[in-house]
Length: 342
Image 1 (spheres, rainbow, N blue to C red):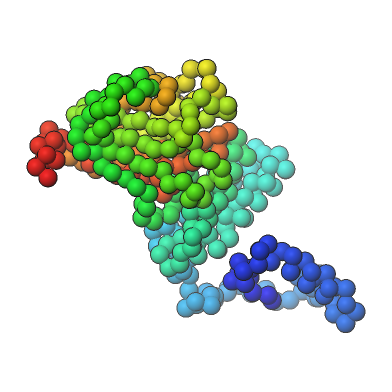
Image 2 (cartoon, one colour; image 1 turned 45 degrees about the vertical axis):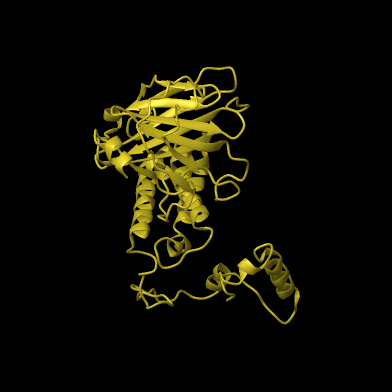
């Protein structure tokens, strides 16, 4: 049996050319007989069935590498939910769709996903593996005609946020008009600068350049700058994930092609149809919006989290930050005096 993993990363094509050549030459020689496992078992009489297999692994003879850590357990939970969902819906699917959905499940059941989850091992491709794993599970729901659960859009990997984030230094009161109205409008806001040429998402030019964020005592204000322009040639959906200790909520902003009016609404839970409209939004040179703190369960003095995701045709093309959330403390009435003293 050839080694299944460590050698192939050193081949420019992942070893595909070598393996094809190897097996072609092996089967072409007269002094070797090759057969598949099915062929081997098919020509032998029935053997005794093993009722139990001892826990087997070349690492400590247990499964600690693949299960037990927070990331691993979360990934297994998402997989179990997707499989249970498919089992409940299997009778509603035709043979072709059921086969495709099962292939997605089988792909997600591969042990290598869980090898890379958790703190035991890591690679430069952790975020890519995470995205691929969740995509397999999302496809199960799509093949069943359902929107994937929102939690499958959130990375399982928990690595440190490395992109540049600066926290707000004062309260802000922007005019939500989609324009850079005056120089001081966002001067004391926090800023998240998107690192270009990095990451594991869709390989193309990122749409988002930077994100400004800040508060007054009643509202959260957000501004998103595009690399070039918000005049789009293809529709894009901007999803803003809000999270606190008490609740999670998503604001979905559908941006059509240039010249058409955007639409925005809150998504309640995992039901894509249960939307309530959102009005305080403008997009011209920049995208600006203001959200009352009470609508996302944020209160002064508490930690709040948010992240921004871009979708095209239902597929995630960008997420900022790529991993986790931007975490910020919601200001209370003492915020500016404390900040000024510091």
